[in-house]
Length: 117
Image (cartoon, rainbow, N blue to C red; front, top):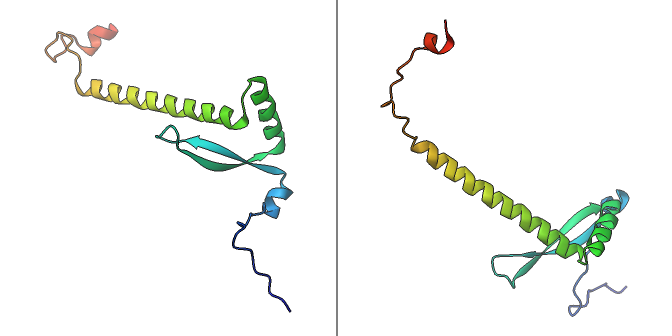
């Protein structure tokens, strides 16, 4: 009997699992832009076929690829998150140094006066 030995010159190509084929998900690869503009990293997404078909149509309507469309969408999410965090830090810093209201830190009124009791 002969042993089956893989050819070392050819890389092994993984097959999608049966579980993914059964639930009709489709795998796509997306290039992700890192801090270095030229460096990219591939990621794998499992999407339902219907979603992937619709995304392909949307990308084509915009004159883009699925990868380009997702890259822009993810970059937008990152940008919004960075803006939110910066605003949060500014708000927290402002709470550390309260504004002066001209009262010297003491209220010149009573609760009853404010509520006409």
